[in-house]
Amino acid sequence: MEINRDVYLDRLIVRKHNGFIKVITGIRRSGKSYLLNTLFYNHLIEENIAPDHIIKFAFDSAEDLLKIGENPIVLDNEKEDRKVDPSKFLNWLMPQITGEGMYYLLLDEVQKLGAFESVLNGFLRKSNMDVYVTGSNSKFLSKDILTEFEGRGDEVHVLPLSFSEYYAFKQGDKSEAYDDYSVYGGLPAVVLMPTEEQKTNYLISQMKNLYLRDIVNRYSVQDETALGEVMDVIASGISTLTNPRKIASTMSSVHGMATCDATVDRYIGYAEEAFMLTRVKRYNVKGRKYIGTPYKIYFEDIGLRNARLSFRQIEGTHIMENIIYNELRYRGYQVDVGTVESREKDADGKEIRVQREIDFIASLGSKKYYIQSAYAIPNQEKYEQEIQPFERTMDSFKKIIIVEKSMKPRYDENGYLMMGVKEFLLDANSLLI
Image (cartoon, rainbow, N blue to C red):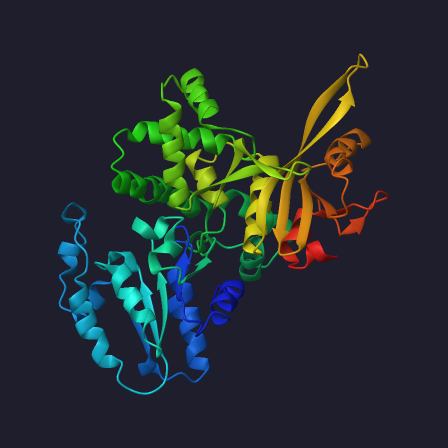
């Protein structure tokens, strides 16, 4: 059975022939190559594009490298730090582009090609070439990727499977599926594994031997232990406000390891560039400005977060918030953490300044939603706590509360939309109700 990635496939389809390099980014093992070389390729065939007008090349494939006269064994040696010779690749490629009509070039792991920026910029000058590339590591893990192609790069960022993609494949009981997803996440390889033991071992191994190893190798990190400890502290504190100083303090007091703020900040940046983590800034709703620190950090895949902690901290509250954040990004929203300041009286009647948090401000064009992730609302006091930030925004944007238990979307007596997390995740239009 094929795992569908229709949202991302549609994003590639609408970008056809737009004169840009289509750049597919995302954490390793998220399904970038499958999206390009299987799903998008099949789309082109269904559109009656002749196979000889679709040229695929993977720069991490020994078979493909041998086609152009490269030695895959030498190139695979990390110590050699060798790149594929661009002249060999172009000498193989260009004789194939001789006929009429559009040629579709699908390049995988293109950062392994020497001078790939110049090569791709050269393709932009050819009106009969539509170019799509994927990449991991190196500059393809940079937030500034679009500048590499003189402003003519068009990024499609691929996340691991959303819960709706996961459930479309797994089916069965929705609650059981959500529980499984909350623990093991949405990396496609994990979803295909039949046992919990396989999933657990795979995620722990990949976190240690692939994702962190990539960071160590790329940035020549000398203190791997400190990097691991930073990741542990972040994983333990997802969905809570933090900053490098707080993380460094925790490392010192809890783990007995002295690390300076600047080193912690640098390690967070490395993980961000690898798309393992995302820092989410706070936005002052009334002041209409961003607040630099503290901020929240979320994992790109909740399974990797849990694996980093050896599956010892499975807190439903924080995990649900991380899943909601990733879902909003999957739907294309710009997401911030909201803060609302107000003047209130304390128990002694003294007026004080109070700052309250809105878990997410989700924006897309003119649309804006305020969202609270409330694992449970057992009583009126908890409900009042969740809606207080909403009450103080003084605007008309839709306000939504998402809870863990199953609940069909409904508006409460205050006009706030409430729904269960599974109902939110499985209905692409859940925010529009």
